[in-house]
Image (cartoon, rainbow, N blue to C red; front, side, top):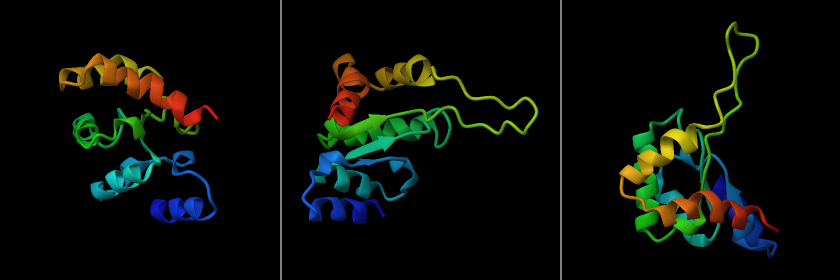
Length: 129
Protein backbone atom coordinates (compact mmCIF):
# COMPACT_ATOMS: atom_id res chain seq x y z
CA UNK A 1 0.00 0.00 0.00
CA UNK A 2 2.88 2.41 0.69
CA UNK A 3 3.98 2.14 -2.93
CA UNK A 4 0.46 3.05 -4.07
CA UNK A 5 0.34 6.01 -1.69
CA UNK A 6 3.67 7.28 -2.97
CA UNK A 7 2.44 6.88 -6.56
CA UNK A 8 -0.55 9.12 -5.78
CA UNK A 9 1.65 11.73 -4.10
CA UNK A 10 3.96 11.86 -7.10
CA UNK A 11 1.09 11.83 -9.60
CA UNK A 12 -0.43 14.96 -8.10
CA UNK A 13 2.93 16.70 -8.19
CA UNK A 14 4.19 16.50 -4.64
CA UNK A 15 7.69 15.49 -3.64
CA UNK A 16 8.19 11.97 -2.28
CA UNK A 17 10.04 13.64 0.60
CA UNK A 18 6.62 14.78 1.86
CA UNK A 19 5.66 11.16 2.55
CA UNK A 20 6.63 9.35 5.74
CA UNK A 21 5.98 5.64 5.52
CA UNK A 22 5.19 4.89 9.14
CA UNK A 23 5.41 1.32 10.41
CA UNK A 24 7.79 0.38 7.59
CA UNK A 25 8.96 -2.39 9.91
CA UNK A 26 5.59 -4.12 9.41
CA UNK A 27 6.48 -4.78 5.76
CA UNK A 28 8.28 -8.14 5.58
CA UNK A 29 9.71 -7.51 2.10
CA UNK A 30 12.84 -5.53 2.94
CA UNK A 31 13.42 -4.71 -0.72
CA UNK A 32 10.38 -2.41 -0.50
CA UNK A 33 12.03 -0.49 2.34
CA UNK A 34 14.95 0.29 0.05
CA UNK A 35 12.80 0.87 -3.02
CA UNK A 36 10.68 3.55 -1.40
CA UNK A 37 13.64 5.22 0.30
CA UNK A 38 15.38 5.35 -3.08
CA UNK A 39 12.29 7.03 -4.50
CA UNK A 40 12.79 9.75 -1.90
CA UNK A 41 10.26 9.08 0.83
CA UNK A 42 11.02 8.64 4.50
CA UNK A 43 10.94 5.13 5.91
CA UNK A 44 10.20 4.90 9.61
CA UNK A 45 11.07 2.00 11.88
CA UNK A 46 8.96 2.17 15.00
CA UNK A 47 8.23 -0.19 17.79
CA UNK A 48 11.94 -0.31 18.58
CA UNK A 49 12.23 -2.08 21.91
CA UNK A 50 9.10 -4.10 21.27
CA UNK A 51 8.64 -6.13 18.12
CA UNK A 52 10.64 -7.29 16.16
CA UNK A 53 13.87 -7.66 18.10
CA UNK A 54 16.53 -4.98 18.44
CA UNK A 55 18.86 -7.24 16.47
CA UNK A 56 16.42 -7.21 13.55
CA UNK A 57 16.14 -3.43 13.64
CA UNK A 58 19.92 -3.07 13.81
CA UNK A 59 20.35 -5.39 10.82
CA UNK A 60 17.79 -3.39 8.82
CA UNK A 61 19.37 -0.06 9.79
CA UNK A 62 22.82 -1.29 8.79
CA UNK A 63 21.44 -2.41 5.42
CA UNK A 64 19.77 0.98 4.89
CA UNK A 65 23.01 2.75 5.79
CA UNK A 66 25.05 0.45 3.52
CA UNK A 67 22.67 1.33 0.68
CA UNK A 68 23.45 5.02 1.26
CA UNK A 69 19.89 5.78 2.36
CA UNK A 70 20.47 6.81 5.97
CA UNK A 71 19.21 10.27 5.11
CA UNK A 72 15.74 8.76 4.49
CA UNK A 73 15.40 6.84 7.76
CA UNK A 74 13.45 7.71 10.91
CA UNK A 75 13.54 5.78 14.18
CA UNK A 76 10.86 5.57 16.86
CA UNK A 77 9.88 3.40 19.77
CA UNK A 78 6.18 4.24 19.29
CA UNK A 79 5.60 4.31 23.04
CA UNK A 80 2.44 5.13 24.91
CA UNK A 81 0.26 2.23 23.83
CA UNK A 82 -1.22 0.22 26.63
CA UNK A 83 -4.56 -1.17 27.73
CA UNK A 84 -5.82 0.83 30.72
CA UNK A 85 -8.56 -1.75 31.29
CA UNK A 86 -5.92 -4.29 32.32
CA UNK A 87 -4.71 -4.24 35.93
CA UNK A 88 -1.16 -2.95 36.17
CA UNK A 89 -1.07 -1.91 32.52
CA UNK A 90 0.87 1.26 31.88
CA UNK A 91 2.70 2.96 29.02
CA UNK A 92 6.21 1.81 28.27
CA UNK A 93 8.88 4.40 29.11
CA UNK A 94 9.80 6.98 26.49
CA UNK A 95 13.51 6.44 27.10
CA UNK A 96 14.16 3.09 25.42
CA UNK A 97 15.50 4.47 22.17
CA UNK A 98 18.05 6.79 23.78
CA UNK A 99 18.99 4.71 26.80
CA UNK A 100 19.04 1.17 25.40
CA UNK A 101 18.83 1.05 21.61
CA UNK A 102 21.28 3.75 20.53
CA UNK A 103 24.12 2.21 22.58
CA UNK A 104 23.41 -1.11 20.82
CA UNK A 105 23.51 0.67 17.48
CA UNK A 106 26.86 2.22 18.41
CA UNK A 107 28.16 -1.19 19.51
CA UNK A 108 27.18 -2.51 16.06
CA UNK A 109 29.55 0.03 14.51
CA UNK A 110 27.32 3.02 13.77
CA UNK A 111 29.35 6.16 14.43
CA UNK A 112 28.20 9.15 16.47
CA UNK A 113 27.77 11.35 13.37
CA UNK A 114 25.35 8.84 11.84
CA UNK A 115 23.46 8.39 15.11
CA UNK A 116 23.06 12.18 15.25
CA UNK A 117 21.77 12.13 11.68
CA UNK A 118 19.20 9.45 12.56
CA UNK A 119 18.03 11.10 15.77
CA UNK A 120 18.38 14.85 15.19
CA UNK A 121 18.91 15.81 11.56
CA UNK A 122 16.50 13.36 9.91
CA UNK A 123 13.52 14.16 12.18
CA UNK A 124 14.16 17.87 11.68
CA UNK A 125 14.32 17.46 7.89
CA UNK A 126 11.28 15.19 7.76
CA UNK A 127 9.02 17.42 9.84
CA UNK A 128 10.33 20.94 9.12
CA UNK A 129 8.06 22.31 6.44
